[in-house]
Length: 296
Image (tube, rainbow, N blue to C red):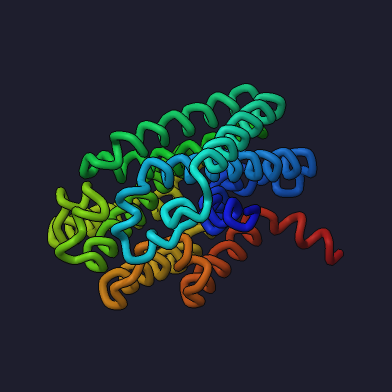
């Protein structure tokens, strides 16, 4: 039973909560032990909270999941995990994570509560409204970034990062919808009703818009944000962002995949390398003084 509960918690989805680390890294507090510990605790609590949302979503979507080629095998949809146990687990995860979040930071707890309520509304109503459904997903990523900001209190965190996060989340969300529409073809609206409001050409236009603006916004951040080095060395990270965006576009357009972005991040090694080298560049640029002092 425990294995079924863990499967329903969708641990792979926890990769989304890495956005909570943004404030810690980009405010150059990665070497602040207290800030690091608090952020990691906050990320864990957000993981538990998001898992409660996934459990509730699976209970709400049980009829639609039964018609889906892969989702029908989920523990709740297949009947292996009884609904009462799933409900109790969801309530326990949500309540405990929110209470502990308040202990960590009242503002962090409020953001967690907003995230939880927003996702309940998404599961019940908003996921069936085209465009709004993806905007809500993007809002979830922005809330993650904001949660990280209020855990530690920042001094050098640029608002541009909120813009980049929003656009990147929209890009991934519309890409996910395109992949689902391609996979499910004529039966798409039977599995996810909102897909009836999308078409491949429409999604391609949306993806073109948000991918372009993501690149522009990130580029502007690298040479206009006041918290960055004056020599604009942060611009060296732009090629990795470009490749990551192009790689995901290749996956959804050519490989006809991308229905689960979190799985792509965990399995696609070219994308992983792009993210890895981008991360290395960011760390070196922000923490070069601390790194050089280690070798002196």
